[in-house]
Length: 201
Image (tube, rainbow, N blue to C red):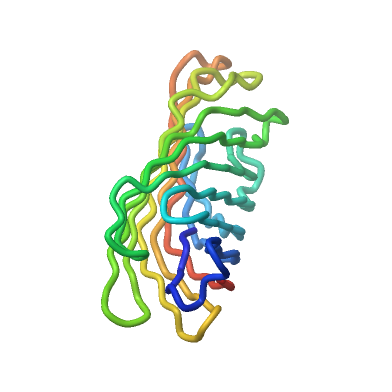
């Protein structure tokens, strides 16, 4: 979910990437009897205008076998700004945006998303990245209240050929919530490795 750009491949002042990945995550929830092998496809895109401002979005779709609070489909969009950027692949950026989750209980919820990314370039066509995002509060959705989320994404990005990118990483996404049907709080956790690729310019 990150940009893979070297200065020679950029088109003018705009750098960008779009790609698709497979996330082999395991899903656990406090109100579920077992762990689910919830493989997920996600699509990601990102663009930077000049040296400071960027936009990033992602869409995820998981098969969670009918769990009540499943975040089966979720999407997010962030506006981002680099605050420390000695090179294209060495920077610290902060962002804010919105996230939407569609739940298996038939409802959905939206919330403000706050994120941060650090990137460390290595000589050659490779960089490492780490990202953290927090949604402090989603809107209530039917029998679920006080929903919040955190996301951690750690990975490696490789550019094997001009305008092509590959990535491998580990993604963890947690939802905390209050289940009003049973009167207690709970947590769902989806975490696992992903592999994907795309095109950048």
